[in-house]
Image (tube, rainbow, N blue to C red):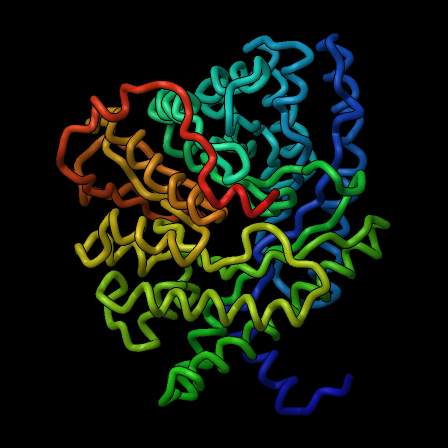
Length: 446
């Protein structure tokens, strides 16, 4: 394929002026070889990964310099820790496993290590129960570890008891700890995105997965072209997404060749950062919705989502992860500002979940709120995923303070604004135990 001088200039402009970068390169590793009912044996086998993790870190740095493309984070995802705890269900064992994973990441120059995760869609196994019981202590004592609990799926149902246990744990976490944990519906197998990243079943022993960024690129093409019709707007987003994804494919294949690890998938999500000009909210506002959260925001987000998926899918052989437009509120400076100004409310984010895969992401919740209300909020989002067969997650940050207050977590985590939850008593509703059965959509799967 030959490129015109105009196209080359356009890509250089994206890299230098529109914050085009690679959100993450993730080495996904099968760690089930380390399973043992002898904890010391499991620790020893996990520590043997030190060499490949360090080599991965060196290769990513080399590729970044070679291609001149900024790579924001290096990540590793491992097999869900739930399986280790099935063999030896002990809370202290879980905490030590988390500490070892965190130390491995720190020593190897890895920004995040994912996989402190488990599945509890229908019920709690002994491994998942111990994992959940260890959540607050493990995440409060680590800095690079991430994880998730999948508590709902269209295939299995929605586990109310697991959601309640998750709420108990998350409300006891520090802000930095809770920013590394999510509760999910329909979690994918090969997500490179923190906090849900983990090595899934049915894939090779190791893979390289890529997550692209590029909201600034989409905003730039819309503002330059000033499209007069929705078809023209759609086409602009689709073409720009193709170019962003091609860059992700190039970086992924280069890392794959250098490391000798097969290329996995490219996550097509547009992920924002607190940097000015790197905002999904700004894309929506560039379409003409002057304050995100106003009427029209869901239509704009739906158009963006679909055009990104269509453009990106032409640029890579295998899409993976969540492949959506992310709206983590604190990590998007304009989203955070609109929430503080009152344009964006918690129910707007729930409604947006219908057309994107974020759910409620990086939103502050006051520690003064009753746990039942937080549980009900999580159930609302997971139920959308359950019924529509969508991947959705909730990542909330419990904070001291009142709605409208904000706390700066620093770095890409940004400023977390405490959201105002809806008034109204929900204790009677949430007090029921058990799980919600599979929806009628389940019959489509056979």
